[in-house]
Length: 371
Image (cartoon, rainbow, N blue to C red; front, side, top):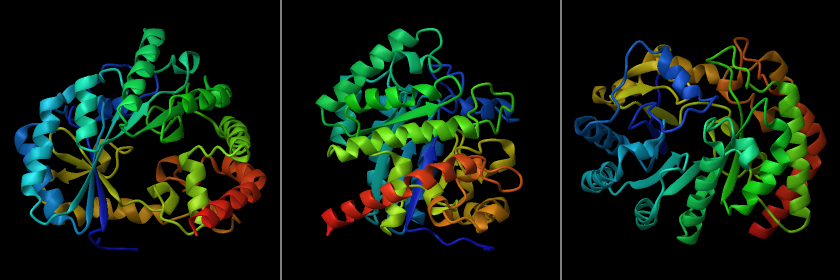
């Protein structure tokens, strides 16, 4: 266990420029639930002083590469001038010539040609939240899901036509998990660089009727894997983050997520007032470690953050003796209960019992192409 933390070579700042403010009211939004539980109300917009502190500290503390990821709520509500100013300030402050990577996660409703040109000109990666076709998407926009789904599809086409890279992120929950294959087939047609399927969380609002249980996630994973592997057999490789991570582990390749690495610590979340949290999935008072104005050293040596990261190393006894520990790593911390038990353990083990030989075959074929 660590009592202090070293500066990582690659670090990601998850930025909430408009806090939890959004133009949708998704039934399963965990971040809105977290915001409602906090004792403080955060400003609807990150101000210039906070932006300056964030950029200065992020660049001063960087050793190689920093990633600025803008999230919400809906981060496009910050307006285009905010992002123009952010980039200009970062360029001016970057006297060390640190590599800076920009990305933004959006529901896609506000995209237009002006936004798309900005993202294209500045080499941003976008993550678009869309759960599938209209029927699977209705819990994201309960009142206008038909109209909103059509607009999102139109705006994704605008990104594609302008060669702006984007990923698609779909939440899988109790009401749409049986549609996962149809959603996968539909999302493929939108031309995404990669897909993520994210099981709906239940760790903030404990009575969440959309939360996905392990049996439902097992069914989803098996059906998704079968269709995905069928595509691979036809010479079509679709990037799905969870499966990509397994393949990367098998090939000893760099891992794309903290969940795949099995430990926390590559991210910090910054709220609109500069408040810093251990992770975007832990945006409640218990996980507030300070303010961006405190400086990198104070934040990174905060006892609450050190405890949070050290806890991610602790695995349940069942995990320690599991044959798939090297692949699963005990799951993301947000999916562990108080005993550090991975709540989707049975689902993941069933998938890997069924799929490991196929994943290994795909991994070896990718390694061979790379060689």
